[in-house]
Length: 255
Length: 271
Image (tube, rainbow over the protein chains, first blue to last red):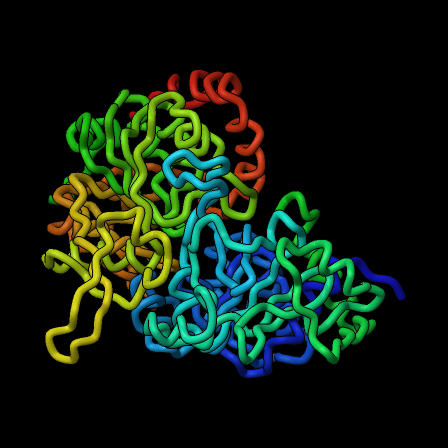
């Protein structure tokens, strides 16, 4: 059986979600991974979208964070101030799922601007959305991002969401209650913060990936764990469930 | 209060050049028709406020209505960038656009403070981010009880707040359900307000989970069926995902955008 790097990435992200966890989900790949998890090993995963839908159980992949199917299938729909103030801020949510335009060696995320000058950016990105507080307050964060030297940079041009700041101890000094990025899942493998240095370290490669590929796709000298794991290949059931989700959602360019 | 009015008349009375105007709707119930009426009436130098500037703000920015944008996420949801917004920020076209940037939590709390008649809101947020250095409206504040340092953001009290909803009765009481985002907060925080609705009915049947805004908390109600398109009104319409997709090509190019504006928005006459 064959699969794409993209499918491996989504499946690896789905596997990282434990059944019963309360998960703050962004649209796109995080939403695909979370819905895949709910259809495979984690039927009781609680999906929370920043539109205020808690416990959404969409039958098909939503195309926006505020699709009607999320409201119709949710345990409850609350206002946007409530979702951030009552549910996210006090630490009631286990896992926050984030994407990134840039991520650095300490897991800080940029989704704001590319370039050195905020007032005159090379590329203006959408901005923060819910991410800064998701990164601060979820018990842990999973980042899903394709690995490339453009995305994996020594220092992000703009810190939109804090990972480990400039190293160990920064989160505690800043008063951030959540643990920070626990996993960075890419199309090549999985990175985890080193317990001592907080630096993102390659701990796992996907099947068929050479760690040198991951190093080449990283804009800093990538640390590689002494015992490097290999991600188990996607199962037939995982691939079938993912492809069914994508088929129902229509062609990717329409999403 | 809660006066039923034609969209054109309500906008003409509410929106003035230089006003601070907030159109809200979190994916759902976005008052797109009202935004396009502001374009048709040629308003200029607006400070536009919105958590998630998407297609309707891209249109208003591209049409030259805005001097400043206060926001937390600017994009075409599920599609990509807002090209008119990017052109304004990166190239000052058609006019330079000043930005004031927040997070969703910050913006939501700014509306809450505005609705509550408080000068600012307190949250755990922004700490360690570069937003703090770029946005003067984000300040640390020390809790007088515990000494903990938190973040303060000032209240938002727009001159005009506009949302879309499912329906109203003839007295101007508004009923809405589904994802209601910051609808209540923006209407209550704004000095004057407009709610566009799918229909005006004789009686509002109670619905589980529905929210009512009483007529005396709203300035105008205008009946605008389909007024949220391409967003949607639960129970009335579906989100038009193809339109969001199509907007990418229209908005990418200045000439294509101007042609779209001249052909689609400007000629429309509403009763």
